[in-house]
Length: 338
Ligand code: TDX
Image 1 (cartoon, rainbow, N blue to C red):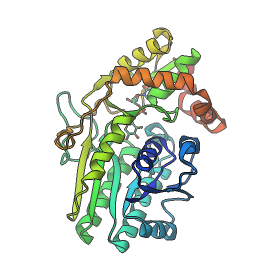
Image 2: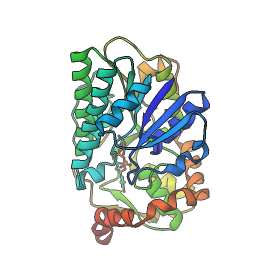
Image 3: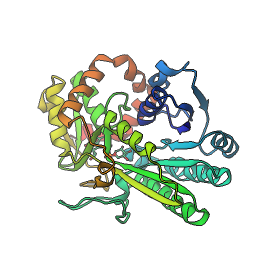
């Protein structure tokens, strides 16, 4: 395949780029290098003969049109992804997550012979009651500016697929974790702070439930999806979920144990506004295609804690001025008041 990956310097994108190159595909990586990108994630493949990096924005119409025209498959991982940041600064989420997707759709519409595969999220369904799982056709009920932008992107995809008879595959994943994830996210934030003996800001009662997938399992799922892309016009949605659903407090306690920290580091702080209580995906469609997760959460957390402990040089640069300012806005008062 000749794949255009967008957002390939991010967490999920970089794992997928490496896997695609290892499988012999040709990869062009279009990345805007926002705060969340880390080109070091791709240092080992930077000079690979079948890899090309393009520094640019998915909202750049002529650039995207040219790159899409060279590809047979477009994999969209470019996005603003952090819910807390969407509460502080929603505009950039609409731009990248919605306008960026429309830019891709326009390029795909005019190129035609290219398969678009888009990464979405379990958050488009909003909070689910206990015992319920969202199947691919469940109704959207997003609650944060982030999840609303991802749902809006999906509605644009649906509109284009319907109007212009385009085949588009939409993957919706549960929470991903593992090496190279930006330290703003729950698991890496708690790991890096536990390693430093710093307080761990647990929002609200800590009983919110998330479904977790180790990044290698996510990459394996993406490979299964890519191996059988439906070519019929329409939206082909597929859920990537493990069924491993845990309250945040339990994850935080495990991290404390693994990082050699004390559970007293966990500090309950003011809740995230509009905080969804529970996500859960029905992943039967993907499993019917032979995928099953290989890494249980306990093992995955141990691997992840070890990676952050042994690879400080890979994530410490992310703790620069931009992050310190964000951290102060997000947690300054919360931790001060805790
Ligand atoms: O400091 C924190 N304290 C805390 O209690 C942070 C950062 C998070 N949390 C809680 C909020 C969530 O219930 O932990 C849970 C996970 O938080 P995040 O890592 O921010 O992830 P979440 O909001 O669940 O969204 C993630 O999964 C779905 C990704 O950020 C999204 O991009 C993805 O679509």
